[in-house]
Length: 203
Image (cartoon, rainbow, N blue to C red):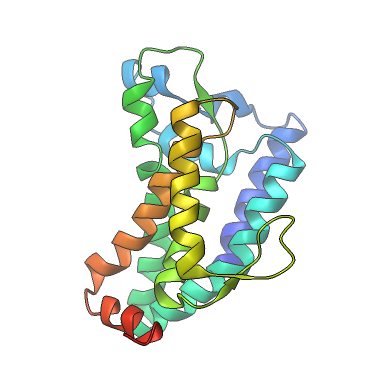
């Protein structure tokens, strides 16, 4: 249910920005504005804005499939109320945490902007891998699912490599740090989740 609410809010704000009803430029992540003008709200609002319909669709599709898994496990691990609260905290805090690296790196670059929930979605994806490491994950152009415990290190290496090369307009570092945060947050809340992770791998 909470996953659907997050999707609905994100879609609503993004669509309002697409149509010009909302000014997306006021919501996007601009490192210079955050650092020098203290517009800290941008560390959250940029996760509600997307670069186009495809960007919005793939982020929300990923959130729909994996968010429900994490939401259910949080409720099982922490109970209905606390589990729901922690799930929302994970998602919202991941929006900000995933962009801290870029904030520091590009704080003096007026032209550096970012939009999208990709960092938070990466956190949710990796939290789901922590709970179900053998779960199959489909990758574009690969017709068979890749187990989460294999997908995770490959994804992190890819994000790190692409962020270092800086060849496109994709926020690879936000994907990387969001993914790492998705692993760390549940373990900070309940360290024995790691034993569950190992047991799922037969270790």
